[in-house]
Length: 327
Image (tube, rainbow, N blue to C red):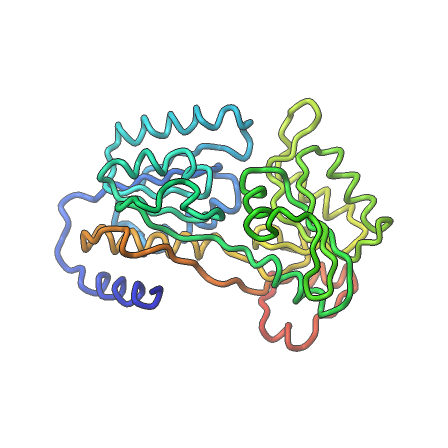
């Protein structure tokens, strides 16, 4: 299905020769915020496809930093903006936007393309909606852990915040089990929102006989007072203080002063595929539903040489050949 989509998209782009009198409007509703690396990455992917072909408008729900009791209010404001703008198509970025707005917009005639969705869209009651389609996000957590562990009988700590997305991942990938075995590797999964508890888990990780740390999401961590800890602060402190090698599942967590690496997903690929689907819908007037849901790139190995050196890790030759390096 993805190959067919790419062929149709290529035909459309090649065949666009008639001048357009006015640009069509596309509203991009972000679950999160513009400073978030994931949003920056998928927006870059969207813009790489659209270029100047459409007029783009944005609304940021900011659901990583705002408490849960404010999410509905943000969704209500996004809905008002949608009604005022009357866009030709809407792109919903990530689960919060789809959860709060997907059903409402699917009851209009406006086509909708979602991206970055970890949950099953059926759980948002969208399976009978004819004007909605999109891109699923499926982080390769189990495969990443088994590959990085090199088949050794290790014990690893997987650490997430306690956000809506993290809860979905626990449910969809781990079936709500907080301890599993993957290819002989004992895996403990923790969902932590409290900053002090997060810090204690990191500092005690070696004493608890963990061999590796895998960082998931860490963007909704707060102090006891309720103050949100910026994700950059959480990541920086974690990398500086972990006594065990830190790996990650998304590209934004990897770098010379970040995690070592892993089999990661890129927001750019989510945005690029969603934009290709949106272009196909707008240029051919095809109904979104027959396109079905798509899954973007299956993931790539990405590492930091500096961090490999810091933790005295040598990658096996077969992994070096298939990996990209950020430094």
